[in-house]
Image (spheres, rainbow over the protein chains, first blue to last red):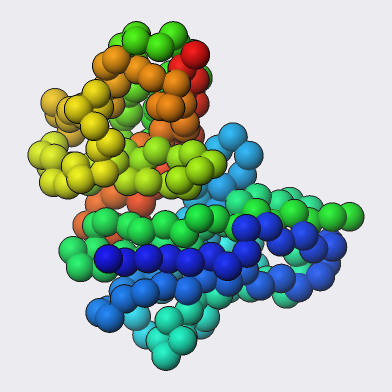
Amino acid sequence: AQSVTQLDSQVPVFEEAPVELRCNYSSSVSVYLFWYVQYPNQGLQLLLKYLSGSTLVKGINGFEAEFNKSQTSFHLRKPSVHISDTAEYFCAVSVGNFNKFYFGSGTKLNVKP
Amino acid sequence: DAGVIQSPRHEVTEMGQEVTLRCKPISGHDYLFWYRQTMMRGLELLIYFNNNVPIDDSGMPEDRFSAKMPNASFSTLKIQPSEPRDSAVYFCASSSRLDGPYEQYFGPGTRLTVT
């Protein structure tokens, strides 16, 4: 079975500081990797995705993620966060028929002024 | 496009009552997914459809849950009878192979409270 682990349930950070949200997955086959963001009382919105090619993927709102196959990781980073980045972030993996997503448990990013 | 539309946004019902959640996917999308989100279990896939046909319902918790997709623009998730442990936020998402690959677009969710 596939699994996605988000090691940190909550990450507090000050505004304009850098942040990294960690994601590890378990799969022995090729995967597609995604990061979604959920703002309070809203649905999930795609931040970025890795399908193939360059391991560094850039997304919306200044976020980027790096696919590391040997470490089976797909960590999300932003060099300088804003108050508006306060939200919950979900890592997801799709394998096999690529229609079924496996989501991590989420990381709540709390940006403080 | 209006995005994925879900109704109602909030539902409060008493234990034992029937609950029906509704979803309109993005026009032209051929995949539709139902998810449930709770604090304890996170985001769980309940069932998904391809071209209106249920493909994988292994996540449906029990026989009290049923989902239908009578046409390409409408799906329902029904709980009968409802129980307090069904309280959660239910999301619908849709995707299209043509937009590929496989990015899912989520609706705003229905917050269900069963008392």
